[in-house]
Structure formats: C-alpha cells, structure tokens
Image (cartoon, rainbow, N blue to C red; front, side):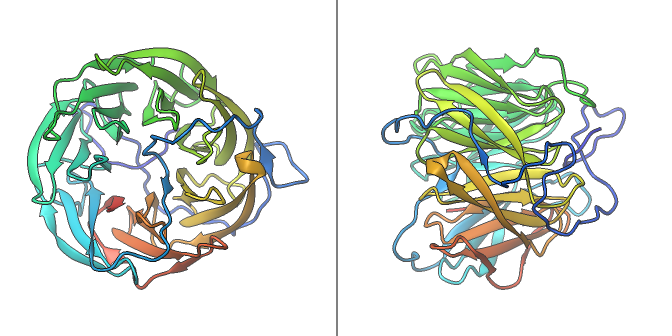
Length: 415
C-alpha cells in the first residue's frame, strides 16, 4: 500500500511521489492502541535503553526550539515550501512575515526559480536558505538571505528529494532522496553556496517492507552528539546510522535499527538530553520511543504507541519536541490533527495527552518559532498554514487567528 503526498508524475515522467486522493475520514480522537499493536494497560511506552549520559552541548539542528522569556518584537521572516507542479501549486518558495507576539502571518512574495521546493532548512548562521527540488532529477538549491538571491542548485544524485538539513558545523548539507532511496552530502562554502556532491549512500538492503516497491529515504539529520548522521527510510523499515568524515564529506555506515515490518518510519526527533529519540511511523499509524547511544550511533527501537487518532491509519508526518524536553507534538495528516504527548522519565517515556484539530487539511510539516512560543502547521490540501500558541507550562495549543492561505503549503520555516 502506498501512502503520502506530493506531485504526481505521468506514466512517462519517471518516479511517482506518494499521493492521496479522495477524502480521508478522520476518526474521533481516542487513546487506545491501534489493533495492529498489542494492547497496553498504561498508555505510556518506555524506551528499550537506559538513559545515556548527556553528550555535552548539542550541535543538532533537528527538532527542539529554544524558549526565551519573552517573544521577539517586530515581524519575523517566514518561508513556505510548496509544490510548483501540482494543481493550484505555488510559483516557488513563499516569502512571508509573522508577528511573534500574535502569530499573525502577512504575505510577502515568492522566490522563483526553484521547482517543487517541498522542504526547507536554514544555515546555522541564518544567512542562507536551502530547498529541495523534489523532482525526477533531484536537486538542492541555496538562497542567500535576506535578499533572497538564488545562489544555484546541485544534483542530489537521486530522484524525489524530500528532506534536507544542515550539519551543525555549517559545512555540509544533508539530503534524502525519497524515490531512489539514497542520502547525499554536499559541501557548503563560506558564502553559503553548495559544492558538488561528496557522497551518495544508497539503501540497497534490507528488502523493502510490505507494499513498498523499494527503499524510500525520508529524512537525513545529525544526532545531538554531532558525530553521527541518521537516515530514516520508510521503504526498508530501517534507520541507518552513519559517521561523517568532516574533511572529505564521506559517509561510513555504522549501524542499522529495524522497526517492525510495515511500520513505514518517516521522521525522527531527539529529546534534548540526547539519549532518546521519537520516531513517527507513517504506514502503521504509530510512534515509538527509541534509545540512542551517542558513543556508537546505535538506535534501539521501542514498542509502537498510539497516535490517539483511532484504529485507522492517519499517516503521521512529523514530530516536534519542546526545548525543555517536556512535550512532544505529532502531525496527523489523515486525522487533520496534532497529537500532544507528555515526555516522562527524562525522555524515556511518552504519555498521550490529547489531539487538537489543525483547522486545515493534511498537515504535512510542523515547526516551532525560534522562541518556542508558536507552532506552525503547513496544510497541503487546504493550502493553508495554521499557527498555534504553545503554553510554556502545559504544552497546550491554542489557535492564533485564522489560517494563512498559501498554495499547496507543505513546509513552514519561521526564523
């Protein structure tokens, strides 16, 4: 069974990114475990490894937002990823601003010259924006900020790149080719521009999971220890751990973590302590707590846990963790909701609290504002971005105004 979202190609056009058609009925939000998982008396699930010692200052740009005592003043930049080839799609990278106090979003134009910029990331110094070009001949593009000047694109060596991230040292761009099941590394020069690819690692084994035609790399990120890179592959039900040669930009695989067959892992987010991570499984509609060993880069996958969206599948998309490590949020596309979890036992356990309607259709990507007080949800099918205020004590979400209209919004990046 294929699942997902993206532009569809004709029979002569090469790859076909997973896409949904028709209505997906949203089940009532309940906290029972899906039928495919073993019932549990306690809705909390604990990781299989003991808590690892803190690895020191985290260099990860992955998932957590810092929390400041007060929101920043004045409008802040907001960039929006979209599909340019789909019906009703955008014309490039959307440019907007948001009010950090109210969450109100104001449109500001578009960066043209980038095809299907469905995922965005920013350099640690804030001066360069990066986008995937999610198409048959996959590429990554650099954009200079604040002038929004396109610096150029480089081939990813694969098809359908759907995710990218910047190594915390700012020297390497990491990208995941969904359609061809591979991950790539590009050097970043002093100007923020990209050099030719230095490595490409293909996920040739294990064999694809049930209903999958091949490997499907969906995420490529740096672990909090800074020494390991983790690639989440939906097609092979595997998370691959690599070491990066920081001089040559080459990858060495060091371990593999298998989910249960048919889980379809999509997105992984670390707890600030560095010893645990949380994995969203798109196909079987679950999340799992994973133990992580920063010394070896080894991930140990725990038992599946409910998303709180009912017994059907709801295509979990992305997880966020608050910077204080107290709460996690999960985007559910079929259920059109955000699940809120309490994080307990120093990161070892998730406890499902509730689900909140996203007030949009098909929340593909969620992101915190830099101060952690706002959460942005990019809703692909409704072409909107919903903004929520995040209560710093309880983790409760409250919608901040009406959703902002943006063509085929699939990624929101507030700066």
